[in-house]
Image 1 (cartoon, helix red, strand yellow):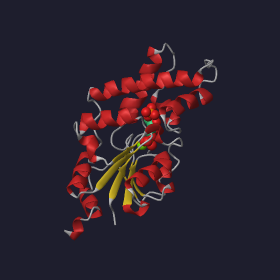
Image 2: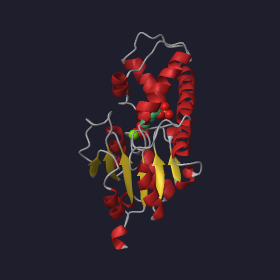
Image 3: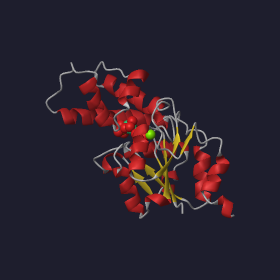
Image 4: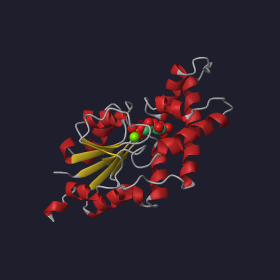
Length: 236
Ligand code: XBP
Ligand code: MG
């Protein structure tokens, strides 16, 4: 029996990678006096690694090997990333990043059905707060029983750990849940945790491997009816 919907955030609830994270990284680089610039094509490659701090390190290892790392490298990356998070939260507060089509309707239907909900993401917790409060409203965070985010587990997606952690918190079995994801790293994580997964693709992920998905959609906009069936509408 389906009891809970588990939502990825970035790329699934909103196009935050394109309109939020990438610009925020670039703003942080500029503010730090670095001449790094992540254009859309490069960012698409950098998405191979989840987590902002991890992504910065990957960039330096693979795309900018000339950069001389400061002695306190981990602190340097942490500081840069904290600045990125501030810029990201500013962009969210400006309210320019809408939810993807159908997301709000699906969440409202789930609430009507008393479906349990959680957020399962690798992004920083304050980024989740910023997105939810600026789109669904000030109290919308409380609609989600668990917000599993950021560094709660050391092994980020594609590892299953963040899904395992969320389900443990909620005392749920994988077969009682459905995950909503948008990327290959995301579905690797959810499927490794044995959770059935619905994919909504986006520009960055349209060529990803979704062969393990239960359903692949452009977005959640159209088949509202099928989600109702999923959530038990067929039984009245
Ligand atoms: C999301 C991510 C995140 C964001 C950056 O992956 O990869 O790292 O790009 O977030 P998913 P932070 O959608 O699979 O959770 O900078 O806050 O780490
Ligand atoms: Mg995602």
